[in-house]
Image: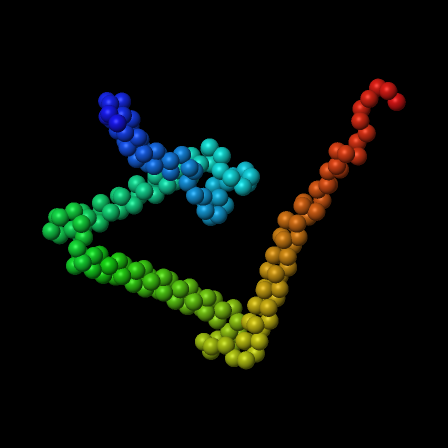
Amino acid sequence: MKNTPCAYLFCAVALLGLPLVSVSAPAAVDEEISPAVLKKYDVNQDGSLDESEKAAWRADKEKSSATREARHAADLARYDVNQDGKLNPEERAAKKAEAEKTRAEKQAARDARKAGRAAAAEAKKLARYDRNQDGKLDEAELAVAKADEETRRAAAEKRKAARAAAKQAPLAAKPVPEPEDDIPPASGHE
């Protein structure tokens, strides 16, 4: 068999065409959409993402990617001591130590705010229920405070139940549309 230029051309196109087909084939297939993504972006709740919903999803993905890249660049600027463009184990350890320090400081601030609120609540409770002004609540004063707390809790539960009933009332009050099959056909021949 004689090899002709067409045979070489055909082989070259076939060999070059296969990688192009395999690279472009996954691009033609829609991205796998997780249930969480569907729940967040399926505005019309039809079970799939239309083009505008996909555009919103892509925009959020791009925004997340840009945020991630900006955070990485900031980390490099702050922790990359040797300026090699990546964080080595020592630099990552410094970043982790600083993050833990910041986390501990935030937790201490939350604990301090919580303790301050508890102290304020206790002072308010003493001011309201300490009838004998001895700086502590005796059994009778505690009983009054507990009864008031139960009354407030019961009233809050009653309000919560009323709100829930109010939310359910419009749903129950909506009339159910009658099926269209029950409507006789409109004809002039009766």
